[in-house]
Image 1: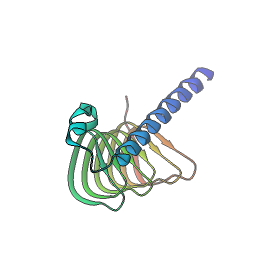
Image 2: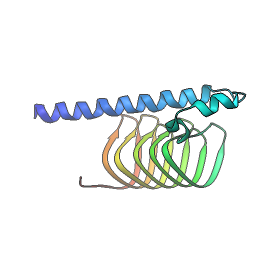
Image 3: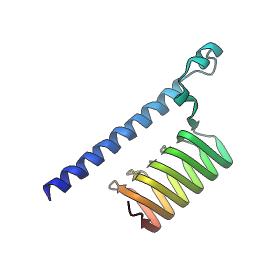
Length: 152
């Protein structure tokens, strides 16, 4: 039993590190000024250019496919496909979502497929059909709907 506890703690710690990295990248993205010179833009790493951030107050309707990380602090209605999805406290997604990693502090509704790990923070609300491998819900986090765990 102690070995299982240690493995669980290690997985949770790894997810917390990933969540922190996502938050830091989102903060760096929002800190960049819009009047940055074009030369600086071209020097950014390729992985930076494969990410998407939808800021607070922004509304998007349609399909989004992001090869890297998507950080959502606004409202999205439609389909979202990405490697890593971070929904901030003001973020709200309604539609079909497919991602490897999902970190929810805001709201996520409808049809959700998470290939690896989903964490619902204390402020997070998830509803609908959830297909996942690993699920973590912090005290206060909410889930309503149907969920099914994938066998790895």
